[in-house]
Length: 263
Ligand SMILES: CC(C)(COP(=O)(O)OP(=O)(O)OC[C@H]1O[C@@H](n2cnc3c(N)ncnc32)[C@H](O)[C@@H]1OP(=O)(O)O)[C@@H](O)C(=O)NCCC(=O)NCCS
Image 1 (cartoon, helix red, strand yellow):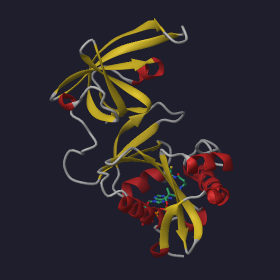
Image 2 (cartoon, protein in one colour):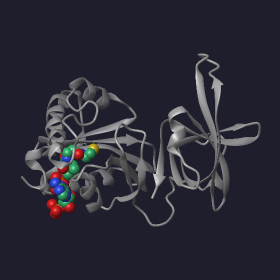
Image 3 (cartoon, protein in one colour):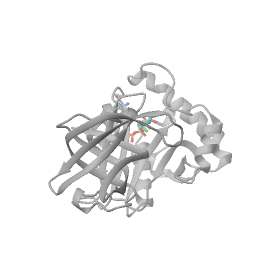
Image 4 (cartoon, helix red, strand yellow):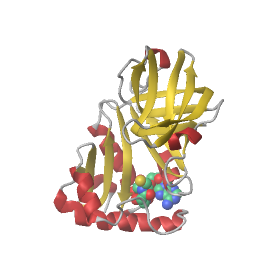
């Protein structure tokens, strides 16, 4: 088997069983590369989970083939034209370390020619994925703490210069979706407790002043998001969205949003 005959195709429901098998095998082998125990990420051994992801219109689920045999999978989190997320990649352990993971990324990048920014997170402990992502040009930009694991967050900028996918604070507009912005946490007001209008539940909310060289914006954080930021640190928000309230722009971290503490 060789990396030169690797191809990728969109996965279909009929592929779910084999994909689940290879996925479970691949992630089980993480126990040799720093995993605190068996398990792997959610759904790793569930055919239903994989069927659900194959059908999910926000994800692009690919099977990795070598001579028509499934040797792994790649799940893209589809974020639009210029920014994409590698949600998951795996190669059957029998085929690892033959350049197939690298070749798969090259094939995926070809499918998204307008994406100038690719991002992903991987657990800090993983002594295999960290060198792998670095070997294909991903650069560590920071850390995330909103998963069950402490994550290293990587990006790969495909073109030179400031990525189209990102905004400077002065360019942020009302109702802008999918905001990716970096800035310094100048101030944290709160948290204060408010009651949800819908459920009456008590919620904690804090107003953060985030600034870059072009300006400042109010970032509104809720509950578990609040302890993720500290004054005087630089952070990046991904999948933020903007709403004006009493003529003031407010940046929020959406359901799929991320807070990344930059290095
Ligand atoms: C991470 C993974 C996809 C890499 O796939 P692969 O096809 O084996 O990777 P490649 O052969 O293209 O390796 C490219 C480079 O990555 C690095 N690398 C890969 N595996 C490595 C390992 N076990 N230890 C150290 N470096 C490694 C090396 O620099 C390697 O180049 P080299 O072989 O010339 O030294 C595969 O190990 C895997 O499926 N892991 C389990 C699932 C997982 O953790 N997925 C990622 C998280 S979503």
